[in-house]
Image (cartoon, rainbow, N blue to C red; front, side, top):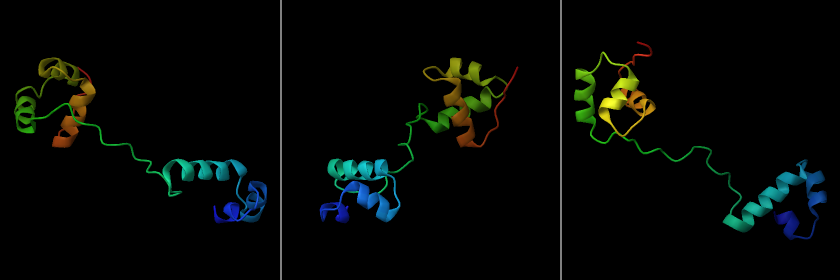
Length: 99
């Protein structure tokens, strides 16, 4: 960015640094909007769990361990089978995939 600010064109900087012009344009836009050219994090923000009371969920799983994740989701209420699956994984349980 210092080269561009010193008066060089984007094409000249592109040839000099062996970078594509779209990359330089992207960096320039990022500098203007965020004030920095540091790379953005590729990790998405953590997804809040639908399961709040983990002790109660563990007791529920112990009582209903013979059911599928879909059946458990219906009984638990307010969440999907995917949320149940993530909860089981967090507790260290394996899940039943088919009936």
